Length: 107
Image 1 (cartoon, rainbow, N blue to C red):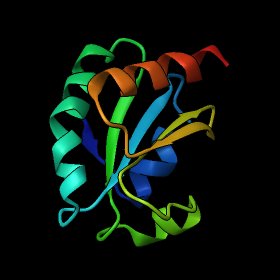
Image 2 (tube, rainbow, N blue to C red):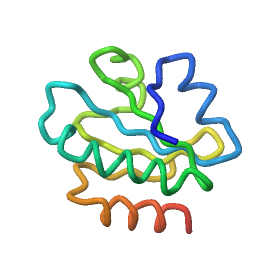
Image 3 (cartoon, one colour):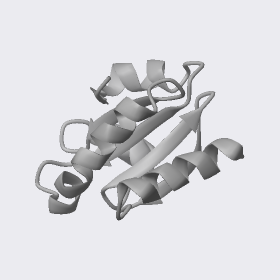
Image 4 (cartoon, one colour):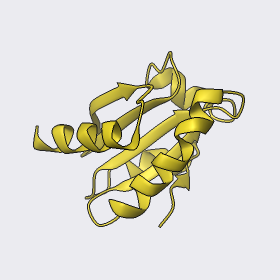
C-alpha cells in the first residue's frame, strides 16, 4: 500500500486509529522532499502491517502544518493514540527512516 494524501478531515481521523501513523510533511517545490519520496513510498509498503503512512502537502494544508508546529520540511512525525510520539527532520536515507520508526515505536 502506498502512502495516502492527508487533508484536514483525514488527519483528525487517522491519528486516532489503532495503528501508529507516520506522516510526511512536504511540499512539491521542496527538492529534498522529492529526493526522499521514493524511500518513503517503500517504507509505506514494507511497514503497512504495523503503521499507516500518509503525506501532508503543507501548501494545500497549511493549517495542519501550523497546528503541528512544522517549521522545516521534510519532517516525518509518528503519531500513536492521537499524539505525536516522535519526529525526524530531513532524514537522509530509507535506513534512517527505518531506524527512526523502530526507535519511536519502542517508546
